[in-house]
Length: 113
Ligand code: 5GP
Ligand code: ZN
Image (cartoon, rainbow, N blue to C red):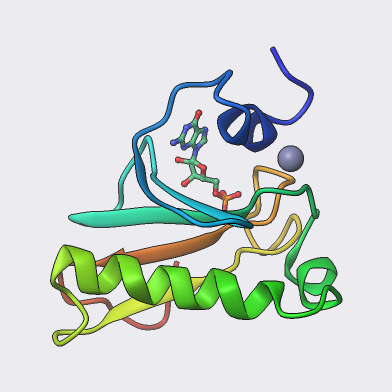
């Protein structure tokens, strides 16, 4: 197994259902979907969390833009969707390669669990 699961997906060593691929970002379906559309958008390079990603010129923008492109492709951009970065232990982050959750296709509730 590669050291980082999502680096393994980027390298094609771990199978994943990819939805969109950019020069610096990849979008793929979450293996345990919490909504009809549940896609993870990641940078190809390894950054641990959203703050580290935001420190890189323009890369956070590309992740958010690709998430929106997935929403358009899935037909949920009009109805709306949720973007989430779980961050750290109490934030519920379980994979240490930053990933944006794009969730949609059903009404979302607030507050989150
Ligand atoms: P986190 O809990 O870190 O915010 O999100 C990690 C996400 O990665 C979870 O929603 C989990 O279902 C997903 N995940 C974990 N392992 C795999 C995998 O091997 N393949 C894919 N496609 N998703 C995974
Ligand atoms: Zn990684």
